[in-house]
Image (cartoon, rainbow, N blue to C red; front, side):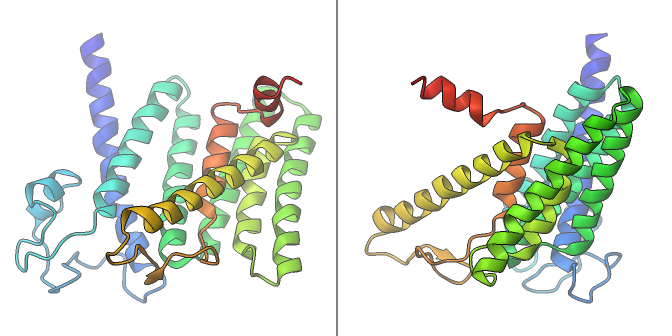
Length: 276
């Protein structure tokens, strides 16, 4: 029995790595006019990759993270995406192997959120079509939960969570004329807020801002102290400053994951560390 379980986990890991490899293609070619079905090639020399250079994770390690033809470095994000998606799929299978619908739903959601995360980090843009994908997953999730335990109140609180998240970020966007927050963050907050519901959406937002602030400060400190006298730590082609535009979707997704899967509660956390 144990052997069969490990075999299934291995299959799920490989499946996740393959999905991650496909997502890398989507991320690179999205909105570039290039076909998703086109042959993969080196981004430096343009050489078409052979089949044995396309194994997720394995080929990257076997090639030493370099192109076989021109020896140019292969961006590490390709392997990171493949590895992260594979690991998340294994975790999801461990959690939902007895409920195939939820595993499939979260597998799709993971793929969509992975594209949003990397694309936003590269371009500071959240593609609308993938926000719609998250919205579809949110409706499917609510439908499943309502069928399992019918409750109109639960649906209403879920919609309230989505509206709260959207209005909160949309207000930031409107007041700042897009300088503080992009409208894409508000669009993404709606389906994520629906999945966590109200008042948990408040926890999702607080965690997103806290993680975002910590990461931003850490990046500034790295640039200030660890690369002193050397080339500045570049971010989107320029040195990182306090006024630099930071993609917020990754932090919003982290807030969602902690709130939805680990049931984080900012009120409980506050009472724990601030008992007075």
